[in-house]
Image (cartoon, rainbow, N blue to C red; front, side, top):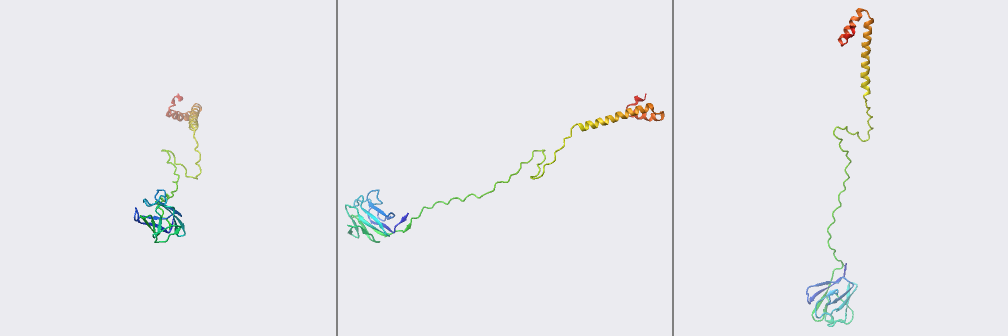
Amino acid sequence: MAVSGVRLFMRQGPRVGQAFDLIKPVVIIGREAGNDVVIEDAQVSRHHAKLTQQGASYIIEDLGSTNGTFIDGHRVMTPTLLSIGARLGFGDTVVLEVQPGIVGEQPQPMMPPSPPPPAYSPPPAYVAPPPAYGAPPPPPYGAPPPPPVEKKGPSCWVWGCGCLAALVVLAIVAGVLLYFVAPPNVAGPICDMLSQVGLGMLCK
């Protein structure tokens, strides 16, 4: 809020040493609490005088007070310009001295500094969960999928065992037939071989 270049300093009255900075273009002085400058003294009327800003100073006029308004002992009869150093009187008991005030802006209350914004931290990179115990590790990202595993059914070993058994049976049958049609010098070794595999009864 802008402050004019004038203030009123109480030299005599109920609060000696009190200063009133004039911060409005129109200032009402009186005894009532609603005035801009309140002076609680019996010699001061409820609405005693009015100050109107003009340039860097103020013009004062009396508002029909009972005990009068004075500048350096002279009663104010018409609006009068205040000068720095003048003594402004209200009745016989209150004297305010016109002093230079602070021109410009009233200092604003200090506000606590706002906390700095939190530093930006990038989101954590995605990490795949570890594979389950005993499971093969997953392929790296972008690698082609592994070829499908061919399932071997039970038909392979079944057919293998069946073929081997058929060959054994064929060999035995061939040996028996060869024993019956072969001469004795050939049938003897064949019978010995059949006896070694537990089939000697076929030679009897």
